[in-house]
Image 1 (cartoon, one colour):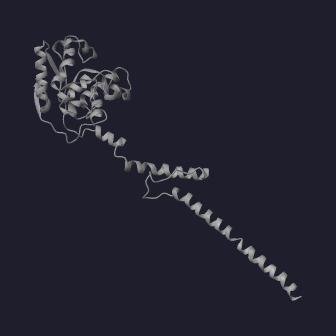
Image 2 (cartoon, one colour; image 1 turned 90 degrees about the vertical axis):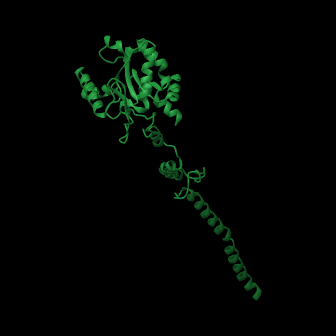
Length: 291
């Protein structure tokens, strides 16, 4: 009788204990889910010591919102990572082309001004025209060789001060204004023919303008038609032997910033000159190759 009264009570206790034990797997699953969430979020958190190679891309199991946030973080941090990890950037390429080399390959053009600390030693080449000592003797030898070949070459410009360039540039600007150009447009057109002060190769003492003595019998100013003179053809074929190049060739204006000038020659040394002339390059292209 007593056993029958106790049995139901005992069964209740067993059911309660059994229900309590069945909750353990649920707790374990909850713990597992929590660990999984932490693993997904952790890679998306930016770290000062992490690199782009260490960061993992979002997995396919992540939501689109999480992927978007991760992408945003990655994009915002990319510039600093790139600039610190890559030695060659667009800015370093610009530095390679800057006129920091004060030798015979110095680059002076519309984008590279003559350095403020640039110095040179002048020597007379012909008449009143002088060039830097690095180029003067080669220029005299070139003119002498042309004369032996039957061409009397006359310099019409060599070393030029910044002040002289300013005067010539303004004169050209005024000329285009006289043609009806606005002042702004006149400056653009003038710069194609006369380098603005500070950007002229003549400041280096390594450049010269020269034509045959009889040129002035036909023209009163420097014109592209000079390419039709036999003296130009001889200069084009032999200038590299003396370390000079035709500095502003045809179809190179987009690179040099200066229109075609069959009278403008630049000293760069024999080795560089022969390579440039044989391959139909301009100085800017050559510097890109050797840097």
